[in-house]
Length: 93
Image 1 (cartoon, rainbow, N blue to C red):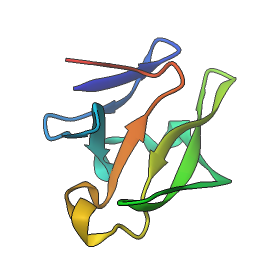
Image 2 (image 1 turned 60 degrees about the vertical axis):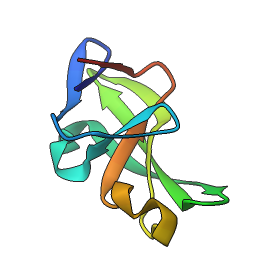
Image 3 (image 1 turned 90 degrees about the vertical axis):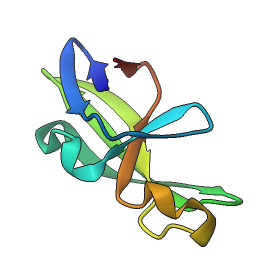
Image 4 (image 1 turned 180 degrees about the vertical axis):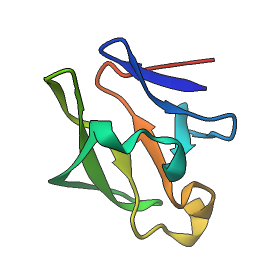
């Protein structure tokens, strides 16, 4: 699977985990040069508190376009150290 934004591959892995129609990429499969941590957080009742990254490619920013769970609940341990995408990030085979 590939995550693409602004015509660049920002993550690539053949070991994604699909939960609620989102592909979660192993954290070591993201191209870290495109990711900046933000102060944004949200809470999922069964996964825990999510943290976010802004994706920046060629000077364009996509605020909070990627999320992950630094402290994952027992029910969602399969996505520990994984990152998912939205806000126009295309995930394809």
